[in-house]
Length: 422
Image (cartoon, rainbow, N blue to C red; front, top):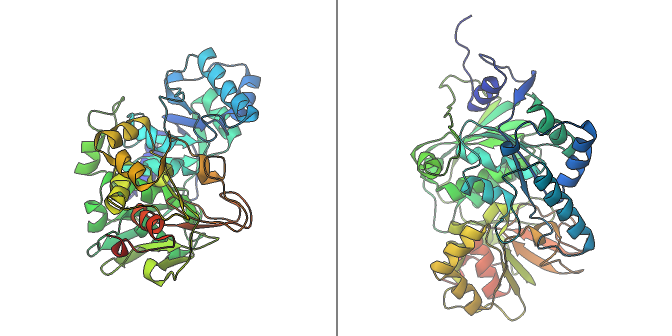
């Protein structure tokens, strides 16, 4: 049989299934390179795994990052973290990250070189799709699926169809990866990519820094996608080189690969946008937001807690003061990002402005701790979800935005365009 044209997602899955090619809709078994869990999802995986009575297939492939309720907020979260810690020690897992050395998992793994191009990565967390930004197939799975994979070193997949998104034109000031993905979800809806691969491409993606690419792939799941992915280029190579702990393999889609659908967006004239409650697809341009007062602003999370994000927020906050009615919480994604932010004077800018800076944690994103909302309160957040009760009380509201919009909103005390502040 002749050559079968394949997308990047199909090629990675085929390579890990020991096949020449795979077809969308096919059920396959594929070997996994990296398995990930956190303090909420790992305890269930551990309980199921221990019942099997077998060793971990490859201790170096299992990464455990307690990041959701850490530093522990109560006795229950302390017990969960203890379960993870003891499991890591018992099985001699080298990639366990404790408080003070940890980070938000999806910021930490790429930074530490634990994931590479061409990998198959599964995580017991829906935002595992973040790693598609380096050209890997990465997706979230259930805790029991993860337990089985810890024993077997492989898992099953249904090969997804691929949607291709091509971005052309010129990005305006203050517009970045967060706006591209919010606008895209706004166009196709939260089920617009259901069980599909979202392949992001075009000159705008090529011009996007790695941090913006991570943001885009991170939120693919908000459109219902199985994975988000960007083919590696020079920027990817520069990021991965010197970090990667294992050899990696670069894949790219064939020019004649088959797609379920191709979307083309000219981004010229796009402005920063905001996703209104209670859905990531309820997107409006920031200038059409109206005068909506806010009580809290959160800058951080696995979506926008990277160095570029903090630099962007600092550009807006430099020499400004947070509105007296607003609580500004800033959470660097990893200890290394925190250290770099200190070195560059970003943390000083945040504290001078009247913001609170935290050790890395997912905390407020899931209404866990460090910024839970009361009834009737509104938050602008650089996080990824704004469902009912996501950040606390069911009668609170979350507005999703990029770090510049979030910072401007903290200064103005209402949803604001960065142009109003800078």
